[in-house]
Length: 427
Image (cartoon, rainbow, N blue to C red; front, side):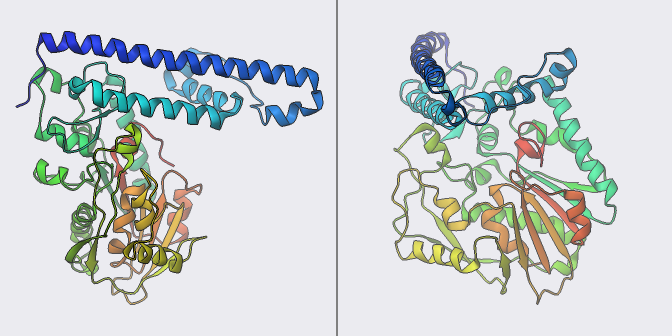
């Protein structure tokens, strides 16, 4: 069992942390000074040329900043309204956000080089990307437990329970994906007193007790060895590999077919093949600008029926052509390029599959994020019609959609942050 660093390591880490924090504060001072100069320049331009004010200032928030109140603060609306107002009132918002993200990536990169003790998640390091002791992959720093999160779990469970109650004939399934950090913690726990403060999937376990009995719930990989689950992820990215996506598909199919045997058997993978010459540096590497590690990109050989797919405004031919280009060596060589999305398909608010020859006359609705990109056609092979809704961009009413399209099975798949209500909002 991996133990925490001793007192000398803590002292050494403290000095390193002070240095990193000083660097970070220096970046902030420079950024704020530059932004202040920009504001002064804008003010002078507006005074000198009033007719250009509208063009310079752009669209501003009409309602301004929210009025503070105890109710807004406790409910979380204060923070949401403040963030919305800040976004609408910051001049050149895109430029400021790009600058902030660039600074944060530099901090992450600097932390990986200077702070090897950042493997302990409780040390106040500057970066949010850590490298485990075996240096085999990049991970997000584990999140900490907190009493506020339990109420967030209950709120999200209430949403699922209400959905299942309103659509009694629809079978509802919830499958959170824990993330590589959680599986690494299960495989390499810290000292007991530290591990109690970390979220290594405990919230996923607690969430089940909050759901109605008619909802089928399980986190992807439940009951499987942690080492095998960790191997399902890219080393530099938060997504599953093709093999990991196939295993996730089999896990989900087992739950669906247990209730609906007409869905048939799971599709086998005849082989996995590496796409030549692709050196994939995924989201974690990009977050830390780390170039010392990369992944290969694989695809599987499956016997999938002929599917009709509707991806407005992208045609099936364009998506197929992109995949063919990869096998022919035609793809971007830009560092940290998103090969996962380029090959398996970019995200869209709504994607529809039709399988006219399917024996099971059932319709499936999947609410997900990019974790489902590689397994979309596998699940769609078992249904007459299959709809994939991206939780981050779908603007429709889910209740209306379920009724209009005669949905039989409703599946939620994705990162546990939004599935369990711990971070991102749902629709």
